[in-house]
Amino acid sequence: MLGFEYVLTNIAQKCQIDYGGAMGAVGFLYGSVKDNLRWNSLSRKKYTNLLMGVGRYLVMEEKELKKIEMEQTNMSSNNISTLLIQAFGGDE
Image (cartoon, rainbow, N blue to C red; front, side):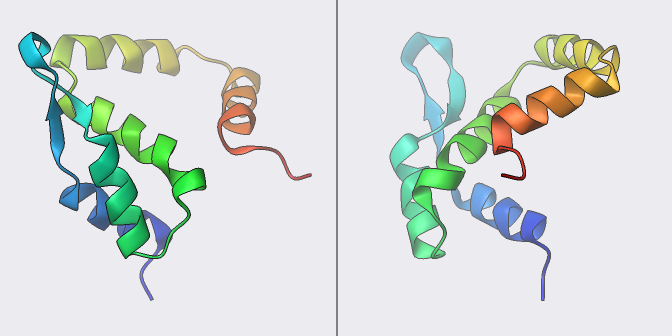
């Protein structure tokens, strides 16, 4: 059985890129993400935001990506834990 990250990667590979007019690529098409999740029997409510974020990172310019990488590298363990709990919820 494949790990969950492989399943999400496979789904992300099938999502269409959204070219937001003059802005160029801005991420994945919302409808494409929702369709691919439905076709793979995954919760659209839980995973749409996650895959939309993957799409934004995928098309991000190198300069912006490095800036975010530096910000995250300088975070403390507590800050990282807080962000993960906010994103995915705690063990309630």
